[in-house]
Image (cartoon, rainbow, N blue to C red; front, side, top):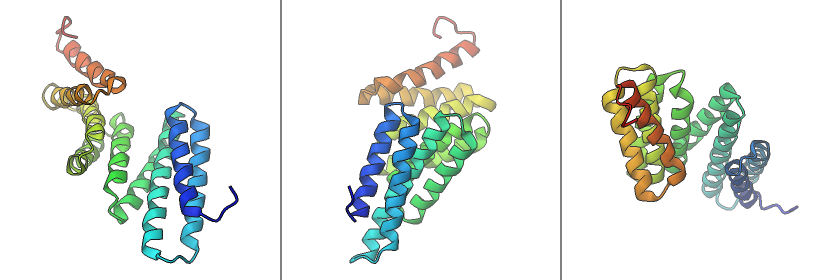
Length: 203
């Protein structure tokens, strides 16, 4: 506290924001993430020994923190503001080729678009899935497969085929990775598809 180590502070604040979000405290998540952005911007404004390193490190913190702000806003019901923040995060990540950060943004945008713009949700989810596969982010692949299943089944005619296939892929990954908290999501989607088919016992 009180130091001039703005880069380190930015990453610490970003982690605190993410931890607050995961614990369900959206207001605190936004507060910490905003502080992360401010610290990273201070680092960018100061002359550094390695400008390239400062730019990459600070932009990573900004992109991650902006994403956290976006998902916290979404959970609080501010969907338009959430989408704007996550799109901004994606843009920052793409500018510097930060694939892991971009992948997280694609996963979150897939959720936000699924209920209002299924076609766009499918597009961003497929892009995110390609990146997640490339960088070996199996956990994110599961989330994106679940997003895809939801988008396919929201307002398209592709639910029985692609939707069910994506949901089963998500469930398989969740079981393999031990992600029991997320496993419920694709299982519910699978159940809904069976219900729509009239297969009530399987549902």
